Length: 170
Length: 258
Ligand SMILES: [Zn+2]
Figure 1 (cartoon, chains in turn red, orange):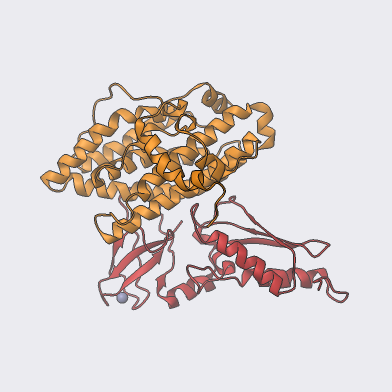
Figure 2: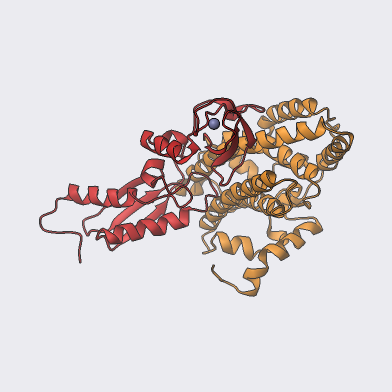
């Protein structure tokens, strides 16, 4: 089966391919898609129906990238694009600014505090002030700068006493 | 990047990519040795995450090294099928992990230099080096913050933690001279705007260390005789042991995949 039909325009194809790729979830934070995260850079369908996808890692050592690449190929195949090539690009470097607002809402609802702008990254002894995703209190304390995955830090809420993950600002 | 190869020699660029990649790889491996041995659960996880960042950076640098070399060696071939004399890492990172104080002081000394290094490398005329540095710089700022906090906590802690930290600083100090070493290959790359003259980083490096060590009530040693040799492939016995373990599976079953 070919994705290049007589009645579909190029634009339709691009949109369909993009939506298929963008719907792939991050294996470590399954509530977010790679579209929400900004990990998906671009999707190009060429004249022959072949799809070229570019993704970028959140962290250099992000172990999810291989899984994401395979999931993108599967999602595209399911959407009728049999030939897809996934390429990893490093530049420009991913930053938490690329996370969509919808992505931030989804994260908070999932119990992970979304990244905040704070500028404290550069300071030697600085610690980010983070609101608890459970009760909203800002009376929180950092437990560890490094959490369950490379992109998260571990916090504790002093109001509701729940521990929570914080998606670090990069 | 291809255009740069006409200006600088392939060998010099290959050498730089190895120097950066090997240094990250070996330190990443040393940190991985803490998995399951951290002083507390959160720190165990933190050390693994630090190692993961470094191994990720190593993958990028070594892939690029293979590309520059043009002999079909990829990141795995370079990591698993070279012997110690072919490794170009800094001697500092191959020393055994020691106690937690030693590991944290090494992370401090390493990241206090590599944060400003990567920050300057973002402007490298080599686009691949610049792209890898842009990612690594963000990660390194967390590494520096993390190690600074621990060194302050331990240095300004109990008598025992203070003594262990001071010993780590004293033991590691002779290995810090190497980060400022510039050989002919590096000189060529500095002139082409690909690499950074480490002398430009000395003030920031001193400033960071003075701030942290002062807060930690630790003494910065007087500059004296410095170890040398890692970047030219003359290593301590420790690297051979590390490689024997790290490479054992690929040496026994070449090309094995998970
Ligand atoms: Zn709370």
